[in-house]
Image 1 (cartoon, rainbow, N blue to C red):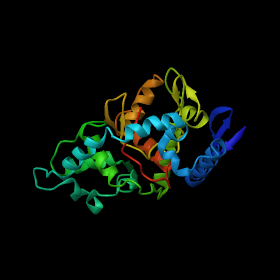
Image 2 (tube, rainbow, N blue to C red):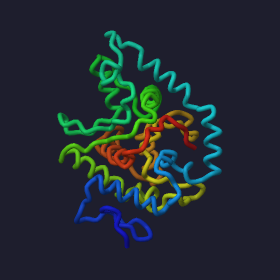
Image 3 (cartoon, rainbow, N blue to C red):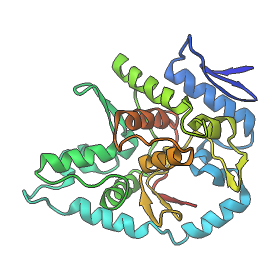
Image 4 (cartoon, rainbow, N blue to C red):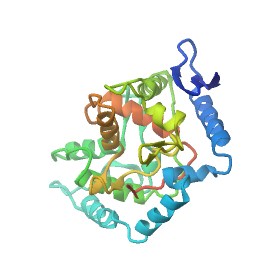
Length: 276
């Protein structure tokens, strides 16, 4: 048996140690060490490319797609939406520092006033409500296009998610617990695929490492035929293990995004991009 921070692994993932919790920074260092041992030749920044960092054939196919990005029009449309004034004359930029440009790498963050994790999608819809507009539907469509533009302006910036206080630490731990919890008829957790079996195949699909998962969103997935958000992928993963999905932007999904993004701290933001 080996211990990764407070993650216990023995051939397959057994779960979270019940009695102790490592500090978040120790969790991250331990997970990085685990992958370094599993993929010794893989450079740290390559984790933002997911399975394309692990398989040369898949990478070649992906790079051919990236020559003519299927999400390029979504970036343009997102920019147009971002800059179009609301009925009151203000724009999204009025709600964000730096006018909303080059800030996506700082999300999600923990808001001490509300005691909740705030995602970038949530901040966009909060901006709309503040300015008298109806919120956008979650997951895809206009919200994903605005995310595409905002993330594009922040490409290359290093992800830096902070856990500033005990309440934030609790949100992190709840997200972490969700990541390691077995769910659904298949009785699987996120970690079964993306920690214990990262780099292995499940049927025809190569499983990507957990580090870097938050770095490349929004994503144009060929399965979707559209750009979608990270939480849309959470929803799909739950359905794949035949589990009941959480509600969009629920505490469960926001805390999960907080944990996953912290596990990408130190990596450059690489979204939007494409995936199979």
